[in-house]
Image: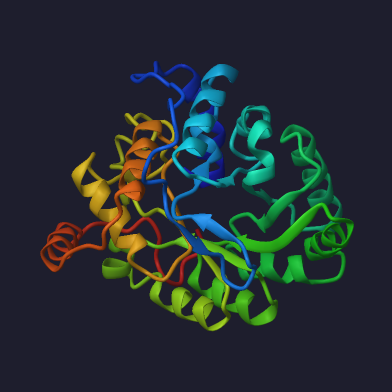
Length: 320
C-alpha cells in the first residue's frame, strides 16, 4: 500500500480501534525533563524526541489536550504534523494553543507547485490556530522529478521563500525517503533541516542513511530522524489488517527492542527523533528520552544481530 494511501486509510481505521490505554495529563514537570539538542545552525534547541501529529489523529479533543499537556510537562517542545495525517491538524491546533509560545511547530506540504503549496500552508495555519509555523517542510520529497518541480519556475519553493518573508514560516526543510533525492536536494538548496529515516535495520541491511547523515552534517543542517522504532515491513497477510493502525510499517518489539532501537538512533549526531504515531510507542519514547543513555557495546551487538536478514522498509536506489 502506498504510504499516503495508508495514512488516509489509517484515519478511517483508527477511529474504529478501541484505545487500550488512558490519556491523562502529567501532574507536574518531572525532575529530569527530556534533554534538548541544537537544531543545526538555526539557533533553536529541540527536545531529543518529537511529538508526531498522528498521535492525536482521531482522538477526542479532550484526549488530544491531555497528551499534549503531558508531553509539554515532560519536556517536549518539538511538534510535527502534516495535512495527510487525517484530522491531526484539527486536533493538535487547539491542544497546542496554550503552549504555542514555547513550542517549535513543524508542518509539511505535499504541494509541489506554488499555488497548491500556498493553499496548504494557509489551511494548515487555520487548523493549527497559529499565525506561523517554525519549520515548513516539503513532505516525502522522494522522486528527482519532484525536486525539479519544487525548485523550478512556479515551484513550491517560491511559496516557501515568500512565506518566510511574510513571517508565516521561520525555517525551510524537507522530509525524504530516497537517498539520491536527499543528497541532490542538499546540494541544490541551502535547507535548514532534513527529516529522514535513521534506523538500525536500514543502516545494516540496506546501507540507507550513512550518506545522508554525513552530507547533512557537512551542511550544518538540523537533522531530524524518522523510524527509530521501526523494524521491517508487514507480512503480506498483515498489510491491511494488523494491530498497529497508525504504523504503516512493523515497529520493533515492545518495549525492549523498541527502546534499544530508539537509543541507537539517538546515539547518532542528530537533533531529534520522531517516534511512531502509536500512543504506546510514543509514551515509551518519552520514557527512553527522559532517561537516555547511549547503547553499550553488548546492547548494540544484540540489536544489530536481531536485524540480520530482515526486509528494510526502504531501499537504496528505489523511489518509495
